[in-house]
Image (cartoon, rainbow, N blue to C red; front, top):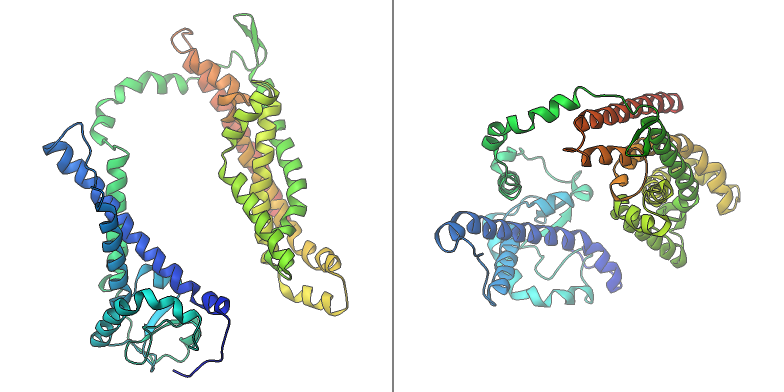
Length: 431
């Protein structure tokens, strides 16, 4: 390998980032397998044969041992196979001639990696080719980005994916995940068939809805109207979508890398904005509705509208900013070449390209908000869900409670279908 000019440790660390992430992903995969083995041991051995009410736990030295074993397996697979992590980050272990290195050299690499494992940080401060670690060399091969060397690599007959380590490991991982999910979710198809009669009357009533309360009607002195609550839901979603889109529009430019990534302050604003988007997207609107229901009143549709409003800002902000990042840079460069200021580049180069996508995303978000608005009533957010859950809670007291629930569900389905049809046609015209 040719000697490289001296680079700062941060530049060297940036070049090593794909290798670091690939290794951490493969290490985490083996950790996941260790967890799955522990769970299945509990399920099939410990609970059945040792202690029905107990749970198999590791001793104090067990977790350090698991960490070391999974680390060793990750090191082993990185030296001898093309792992999932290496494939996802586009890395290949190749020799100086850009061919796969033979097994003997892989063994040398594996042994050398153990000798130099704790010394690897030194590679950030010594004069070595970018993207290499201490155990990389002519005799042990080097991890290379496939995209950079694929045109220079000699032609080799590809192996069938099911004969490769990556293919076998992926298949085993998916199989174990399915098995684990089957056990954790307590899937029981026999019970599903045996107890089908228990819910038969519910399905019968749901499919024979009674629209007694389509317009205003009274139960226990309270007036109920499906039409009224449905309009409440539609306008809750409409308010949240429009106001959320208005706020998300300017914020999306602050969360776009190609707009803000030209200075340290810009990168800071970009990072903070993306962090805010991710935080509010990760908080379910039903949890926000709980807080706002306490704030502005239980059952108040304003609480639901505020919850949807915040979630809409975060969701649309992320979608909008990603759309800004994917614009064609040609018009932007042409406008900038005329001496235009940054805001002029955005106004005349970015916005014309993103408006159709923004409108389509906004209409789609309205569909989502309509569906979400039917659920947040469960925690006092108002809307058609209020009526849905009221009728459901009256099961046993009202003879036709499930029929009334069915009528509300029909109303929701009809409105969602109509709005989906209208928005689809509008998006078609926009596109």
